Length: 334
Ligand code: NDP
Ligand code: MG
Image (cartoon, rainbow, N blue to C red; front, side):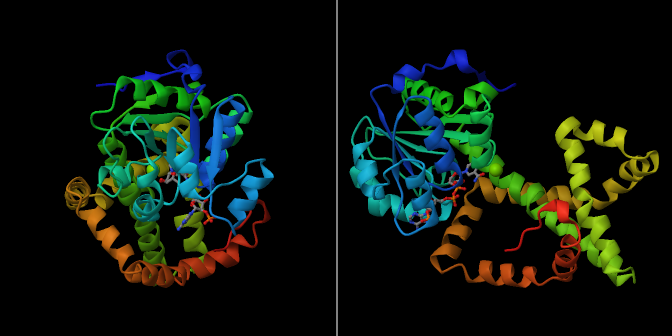
């Protein structure tokens, strides 16, 4: 079934006229959503802890950041735009007790609500408005008069008023200019995790690492392996982005296209597809969420160790050197 998509005419900004919106966290999403809403005429307050660059940024944008607790207390719509792994604890410590019946508890990713780390009290509806892009794009497109397509979902038992307020909010951040897709907390959360695990982060990184290692072990120079297996990925992804698989295949050589059709299916096999289903199942049952929450509760030791190990891989070392030769790519270091 095709998704229901809302545009500007489906949303009424005046519904937010007498409401106060608290943006909790002035990071990637927070700084963009807060400014867009303010430019759309909404009453926005910011909850941001002092002592960080994000606090100073909020001040320099003309906000007077409040403690999270205070911002939550003063607002009608409370949007938690903190990192997902701290939301549960901060919610319980500083937000939950400030909520009153009729308030709306918002987020831009459903993980914590869907997996029960953030549970709204009686009389408080949950609402998700999630831009499908990073904060800087949400801001820059809005300033150009456009908007980043977004998702909207209301929690179980939420009223139609909440959906209407959500559409007004989406309009306020520019989302309805690009189109707002109606989804559910479950669908947003599960597809997001699946995408990042199987393709975007997990799948692609392992593919690149394994292909690089195969060439290097076979005696090819690591610099050559880096260019072929990592650097050129961007060219291909840009073609996907602009015109899908067909446009990529139209743009590359016939030799590359033939290799794609005949070799690709030998890399992603029935075994890989079976594993994808298993990973999806772990997401749907909450097994992945439990694992990640426990890992964080223990101080994330395995997570940090893997991060350290992978930063020193040969592909990373040679990549750092090669990127420094390519002035136009604005090389980044972590
Ligand atoms: P960021 O990491 O950019 O910003 C996090 C904010 O939370 C900062 O203002 C930070 O302040 C504050 N913060 C971090 N840790 C704490 C803490 N322990 N106590 C109090 N404040 C803290 O987050 P994002 O904007 O990326 O993510 C926010 C939400 O938006 C998440 O749910 C995410 O999934 C979702 N989202 C993100 C997208 C993206 O592209 N970034 C896209 C769509 C959704 P400080 O500077 O003081 O650390
Ligand atoms: Mg995502």
